Image 1 (cartoon, rainbow, N blue to C red):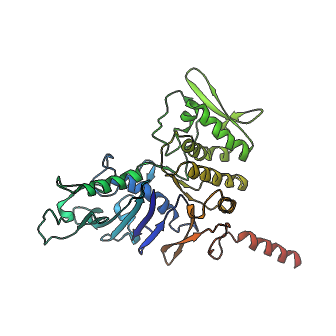
Image 2: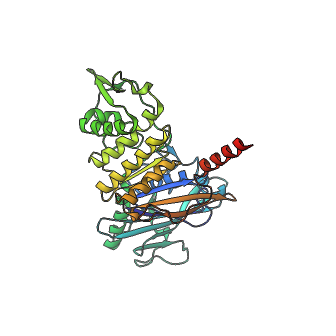
Length: 396
């Protein structure tokens, strides 16, 4: 499980910032406060530490799937300082309770012939591997610098005589990040017609495989329909022909889902991804979602909290990160804590703020009664302000 993210000088985070994570972590805050950058960071770290991924030369990929992090490494540095440095780190724990962590400094290098290239200047993997920039010392078996080790992204190519504990910690760090499904706020547009083919069950990230998975699994379709009936009052059906199929929505007179309301379409990859986790079809251990409430009416937004609660209760090593503006989603999570469906230590809310062009993060905890320990001024206060304005206007 991913326990914490750490950043310094990364995008809108100028100072050293800790982002604590739990089985359910909700990211809230005003626009341009760093929520999306934090939501996408596990995806970036996963791609960087995986030696099997192909990438251009450099410590960090600039694109993962359809998600683009910048046009150059300069775009990742706060203030886009051409000679700047960023620090990235994360901590994980496995099912046996073993903890591991990695902290890396990446220095930007620019010259007359090259630009926006970066190199690793510090690489600390717990206490088992600590590599620093040191030109003066001669390398030995006990003391190496980052100059003595080659990297594939953030994956070090370790010397043959490296201690077995170092290999094991590196494997834990990599494995706990491997199973990430990321659903962006700009979801894949549904097609009116799909050609019959086998689904790629390893690819859930952009939602494009969901129709094929539902076509191949009647049980997944039934599970998705259970949520659609309860929260949206409709059902999905699949009409198949010899070489193609289409998804329809409706009870009495179904119509093609691609021509239905955006709310029905946009929530499909979210519902199906959660249901695939609880049904054992998706082996992802981390599901990160940007704006899951897009185009949904408020009552249905609370249903997403039900999906997250069901998933973390059924899969012990599963966690989800939700970047949202939905008050109803948060209220439903608090209700589940108060009712005992969720333990208070399974949920946290992170408030992202931005002052003087610098982002910060504050953790908001929920107690056993569903109450929060502190609440930032102005958060979800618009309804009350509007009611007061209406009353004031009516009296004048």
